[in-house]
Length: 109
Length: 128
Image 1 (cartoon, rainbow over the protein chains, first blue to last red):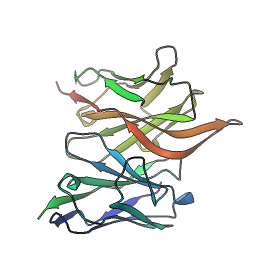
Image 2: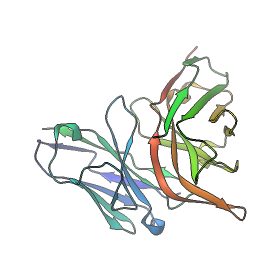
Image 3: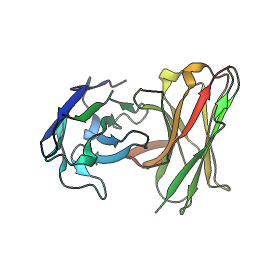
Image 4: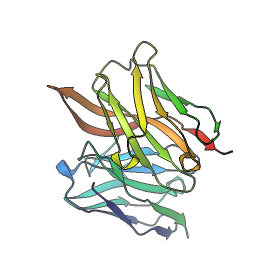
């Protein structure tokens, strides 16, 4: 099973600041099949990024993903008030064993 | 735009059977190249993948959950379901259904897209 580790656990920032979230895999993610989701409390997760760097439909361009192999990054260029949430990475390269990271909470400083 | 809606029992006692259904609206569950999946989130915790099913009926489960779950699909009702027998308090969670991209060919199934459509989730509490 591919174990995903996310850092930091919590990121305290102000609106307008840049957020950089990390996701590290215990082994290489096949085809860079790494996704990022945003979850606002009380809501279902929303897909932001797939294939490590492609934005899902309707996702603003302030969200960007990068990385390959075992190291991946989600960047939010300028935080909007609605971006304060929990972010999860997920690998789907091992299609028999999807795994999620533990999440990074982005909260208001 | 396809929509997913979970329905579940709300409250269960330990040792009872959990049965949750996801109804697919505005699209046929049989059409396209998709897998239909279940994810749960225990209170205050992260996301845990349970398993998924393809239109063909092929299923894959999170082996860490010791295969206690069963996922089935009913194309006539445009639904897919999750069952867990003999629940415990540890099964208290919000259960989400979701859709992702994948297909089966030659006896094997392949995933090429993550979960992009999610239901709102249904809360299941296990308590005596």
